[in-house]
Length: 179
Ligand SMILES: [Zn+2]
Image 1 (cartoon, rainbow, N blue to C red):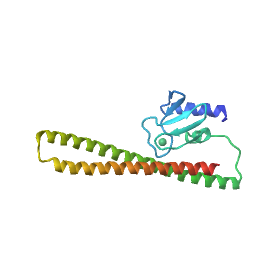
Image 2: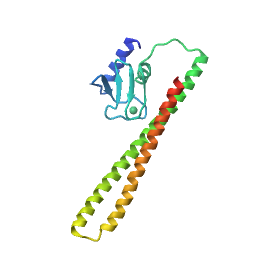
Image 3: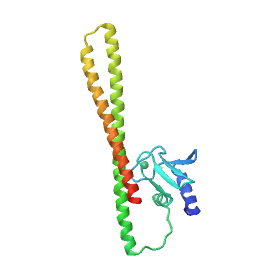
Image 4: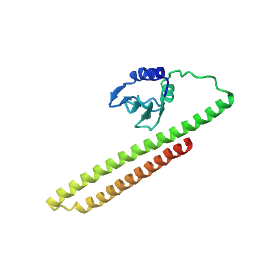
C-alpha cells in the first residue's frame, strides 16, 4: 500500500494530463517519454495503485508513476552498491520499455496494413460483382488483383500473430525475472 499522500499527489498531477474517471479507473495522457499521447491512453487504478498505457504497453506501480510525473518520492540515501543495482535495473527496464514500444508500433503498422488489404479486397470484390453483371472482360485481371490483396491480408495477419507472440514472450520473461 503506497503512502496516501503520494497517491493524492499522483491524482492531482494527473488532473493536468486530461484525467477523467472511467469506471473504476482514471484515464490520462501517457507519461512515457517519447509517447506523444493526444488522447488519454493510459489508465491509473486508484484502488490497486497500478497504471498502464494501452498504446505503448508501459506500466507500473504508484512510485513509478509518481517519478514519471516529476513528483519527488521521499526515500533514504542509497549506498553505492544499491545505486549500482538500481542503475542496472533501470537500464534493463528502459531496454524492456523500448522493446515493448517498438513491438506496439510494429503491431499498429501491421494492423493498418491488414485493414488496408481488407478494404482493397472488399473493393475489388465489389468491382468483380459489377463486372459480372455487365459481363465485362476486366474480371480476370480483377481476380488476379484480389489474389494479391488477399495475400497481403494474410501476411499482415501472420505478422500480427508473430508480434503478439513476441509480446507475450516478453511479458512472461519479465514475470519470470520478477519471480
Ligand atoms: Zn504510452
